[in-house]
Image (cartoon, rainbow, N blue to C red; front, side):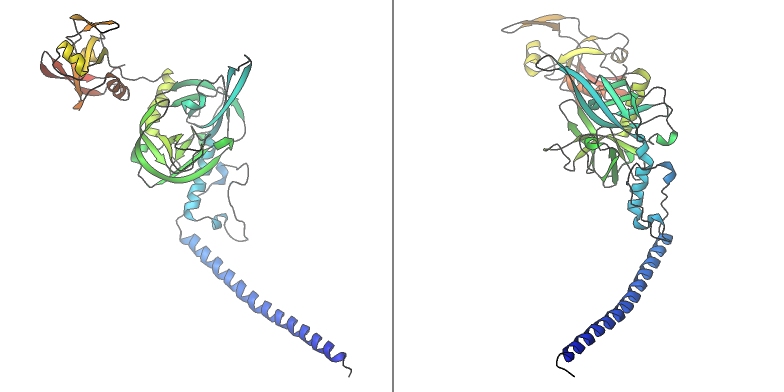
Length: 412
């Protein structure tokens, strides 16, 4: 045998040994891998059988794109890849997405060269009735000359503005001659029963991206909030991501019920920082009903005119107290009139360096309402306007040096 043939024989033997070893390893590892896969599939199947059933009905919604992970392994149900919490969110998305609409607006203005220039805006809204009424935010449609609503299926319609309310930042739109399927109408929840920490799901059109769903929790309840346009007393705070374009869209609980209207974000950059606020749906229901029925919000009024009493004014007039609201005139037939509040009859004149003031100095002075001290007429008016019609309040006044309690029924 030559010297050249020995290395060749060794090399061939090594190759054959490696091939045989690889074949044995493949058979052994493949068998173990198949066994492991079968074991895991059996485990998942057992979990699916024992886990609480969460129904996802694809017949109610056909996604426009790959919105849902479906997982299509042979012999395995499509919910295989979804745990119960994911399936719950998916179910809410499928159920509520047809209710959420894209709201786009155009407002025309003149630029520096007196040319008419359109300014576009966008937001969200949701359908609240089968006859085409849609709830959104006032700031989404304020000042708009044209309002277009795009439904989840891509159809676009020109919407009429039924009414707005700046105080609550709410507006109602209407699409004429359109029959809404009942499954497209959002189901309303109960915001009075909410608890901090429960899941909150937002669906809207942030930055124009239709049907975007974000998930978080309710971070706080009854948050007071003041913006440049209005003030709120009992907002829902959530960390579900809310961005420009989400305004007017629904905040939803795990049961698929609307619990709020996404309205404001706290942000230093214009994007979501995990601090968003929604109008409680219970407060929104009455506003929506009034806007649809009357085109405006029916609110209680003071039923009188008057002004705030300050210490220096009280000293100049010799009043019995140095704070409160001095009534000038009471509107005939108002709740204040029925309660027996009295205006003044003694007209006096006061002067300062620049002008003179004429008013009555002997009317009732309101010092308390329902046991709370009254110091400003604007605060008193604001509080009464946020109360319900026909609600009764106790008004305490100073009259001829005596405290007098009166019961007033709030009227328009």
